Length: 163
Image (cartoon, rainbow, N blue to C red; front, side, top):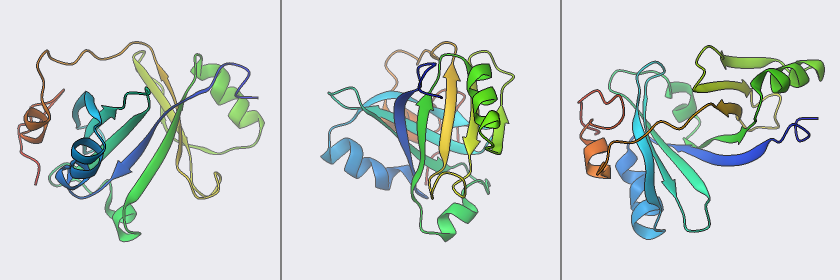
């Protein structure tokens, strides 16, 4: 069972064509504070992760310029993109998921700092389920602001401003 090796809830991801539209709600209205942010150029999205006073986190995402990563997702309207659970040992988690007959997608297992696999929404009752292992947290540049990220200057930033 995945819970036996210590799977814990980490965050939910919400995607929209513009981070600015999400930030109005989750940052300005609800008070989430910047935890991590940057561009995932490998996949094609910009992310801002916010943390709330009780420790919960939400990840806000928009496509990078020219990316098609969210195209099919946005055809369904956008919104809740994924739910993430972290595990202390990705090999154990992958073995258990496969033993139980799940087909894994989006396997990214080569980086000792971040490894992830996904259960497709067809197998997880309509939810994209991310199982992740974090070997260490990526430090954010001191003084990084949301405005810096929107200008394309976050972790691995492209330098291209958000729409």
